[in-house]
Every structure is written in structure tokens, then in C-alpha cells.
Length: 177
Image (cartoon, rainbow, N blue to C red; front, side, top):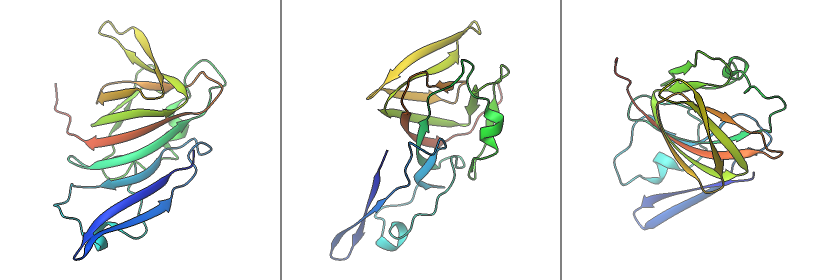
């Protein structure tokens, strides 16, 4: 999927706008960080704070951080979800990484974040363990919005086309239970 990032900032004479092409996401198979802050800034944002070349920050930030990522899940070639181990070695987790793999292996995991997920292309599933530990799935399609509150889940794509999601990640703190 081809995307552009359009960023605005304030100047003394009005609003300044910058548009830039983003890396192709459909072919990547890895998340692409397209925006973020380690802590939310005070407004107004001046041009020198946000314009220019964006420096990727990784997937997760510390508590109070904001990340925006695009993830394209390629169609799966086997029934079990792809294992996280190989993928994790390729990821830039950023400054707030705390991803916990699930006991069942595969792609099951949780993070110390609140994730706001919008399906922007294709179809897929989000699998999760219910209250009895049984694996459940919910089918997701373009326009669906998921609020993932730091619980275990995995993403699946059993379709024949890429499943692309936009993820806004808010860094959170997990308290011991």
C-alpha cells in the first residue's frame, strides 16, 4: 500500500504543511513506524519540531508515548500462526518494549500498551484466549476498529491478499496483579 504522511505545524505567518511518501508497506511484512513521540508535546508545534525527515522511533514508547505504525500481514501459508521468535529478531521495538509471548507460542503476545487498530485493507482475524483459556477469533474487515487493552492476542491472515492495519499505540504501565 502506498501512503503519504502529511504533517502540519504553526509558523508566525500561518500553517506550514509538509507531505512525504512513506515506504511501501504491503511488501514489507514488517511494521512501519510512520509517526510518534516519546512524550506528548505541548502545543503549538513549531515547524522545526515536526517538519523535515522523520526519524523512526520503533514500535513502542515509554509510558505516555504515542506511536503510529502500519502493519501488513501477508497471507499465511500454513495453519498455525507464524512464530514470533523469528519476527521479533527483525523488529525495532523502540524505547518502551515489553512484549510478552503467549504460552502457546505462535504469534500470541501482549504488550504494555493500549493499541487502537483500524483495518485499512484486506481481511484477517484477531485471535485471543477467552476467560476459560479457549482460543477465540473475531473476523476483521476494512473499516473495523479494535481497541486492544494490553491483553493477549495474535493476528492471522488466511485470505489470499495482504491484511493491512494502522495501529496507534499509547505507551502504558502494567501493574502487578
